[in-house]
Image: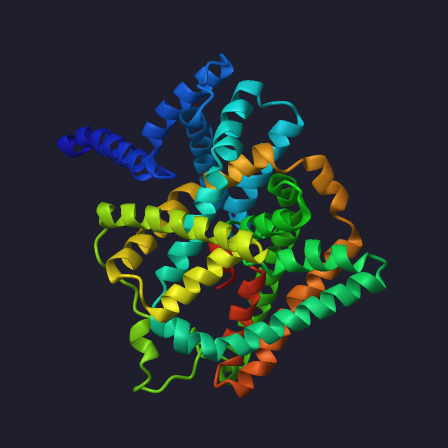
Amino acid sequence: MKQVVAKQPVVEKTQTKAKWWSFYVGSVPLPVYLVMSAIILITAFLQQLPVNMLGGFAVILSLGWLLGTIGANIPIIKNFGGPAIFSLLIPSILVFFNLINQNVLESTNILMKQANFLYFYIACLVCGSILGMNRKILVQGLMRMIIPMMLGMVLAMGVGTLVGVLLGLDWKHTLFFIVTPVLAGGIGEGILPLSLGYSAITGLGSEQLVGQLIPATIIGNFFAIVCTGLLTRLGEQKPRLSGKGQLVKMSDGDDLKDALIEDQSPIDVKLMGAGVLTACTLFILGGLLEHVTGFPGPVLMIVAAAFLKYLNVVPKETQKGSKQLYKFISGNFTFPLMAGLGLLYIPLKDVVGMLTWQYFLVVISVVFTVIATGFVVSRFMNMYPIEAAIVSACQSGMGGTGDVAIL
């Protein structure tokens, strides 16, 4: 018995140590993060951070990973896009109260604005998500879903704009700065490319536009999650409306079942290098086509990627590399990028001034219209109404984080 009692503190100490090392902040264990962030924090306090990409990455990675982890571990808040909201708003609040010194802002500015890391992130995500998509889903699955999604989007644009006009808002501002951001599909793959497109059309800097577009996405994501929670309850009460997680009423011989299986092949760093070149090339191609056609380059980049995927002319290995790069970038740099946006692009005073009761009603009308359209149209598209409505709600979700919370 004495031996057992003597060993107990040692066992508890070992378990505590294991817990510390098993808890990750971003991509590193907590003890390692604490050491690294302490070095960065002390250097920033002394205003000795290098004003280059290295200093910028140190700032956004340490801050974004921390805030994303905190947001992901707070009950309730984590289900409403907590990681993204914390990563965006906390840095903006710190800047508003002058708690971030100039050295930190200059280092971040070099990375985010001068080196345009924002564009690199967008190119990798857009190209990787499209080229990495299973072609059967693009060709067959998209044809099944495009009708309810497009119809829902068109109706939501019309209803949202009409509500805004009836409430005394300018129709152009309502459509382009409230309704469209709600339907953009998140921040990384929605708001950021949208801001580039708006910038190409209006001549304003994309950084000026991001702060005006993001609030609608955050609010829309919140109401979408609330609505899908109610839909889940409805599915439990009326089982005939729900496919228990399955969207399309597929038969055993439906070849889309195989297409939905996730690729589990190991990471290949050389293929990821090909993904980098592919993303850069498609981004440059979009800019070249913009020069020729006058249409926004980011939009043409998306069209070009989808067209190449449809033609199936990109080598399989290159497609795989683009998808692996997409996973790497989205998994490691999404919340850091949002922290950078919060530091530089989101003036808190201006954002708060935009949030009127009319603004909220327009956003709610957009989310409700999208969900209701998916629910009704599903009956004619061989889909389960509950799942169709929930998937439609993802149109107003905050990207991957919001979609996970919605689903």
